[in-house]
Image 1 (cartoon, helix red, strand yellow):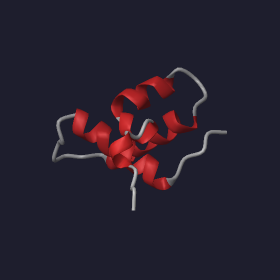
Image 2 (cartoon, one colour; image 1 turned 90 degrees about the vertical axis):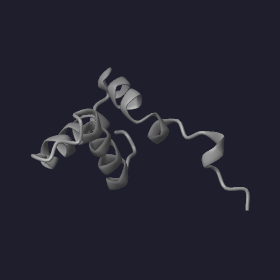
Image 3 (cartoon, one colour; image 1 turned 180 degrees about the vertical axis):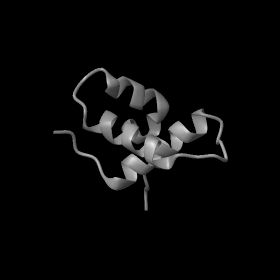
Image 4 (cartoon, one colour; image 1 turned 90 degrees about the horizontal axis):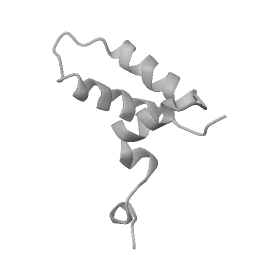
Length: 67
């Protein structure tokens, strides 16, 4: 089973909402369920998630802290 957090679901759901043009008649549960389904899936749907939120799956070197 894939390893992801509630934050991962929230981030991906937000990306889906943005892709839909940030509609004011938002249905967040639809984006949430889609993100959850994709993150839980072991199929090619993971590619959809990676293209929607690449930083979630492939953090850049800039995201790491060198403190």
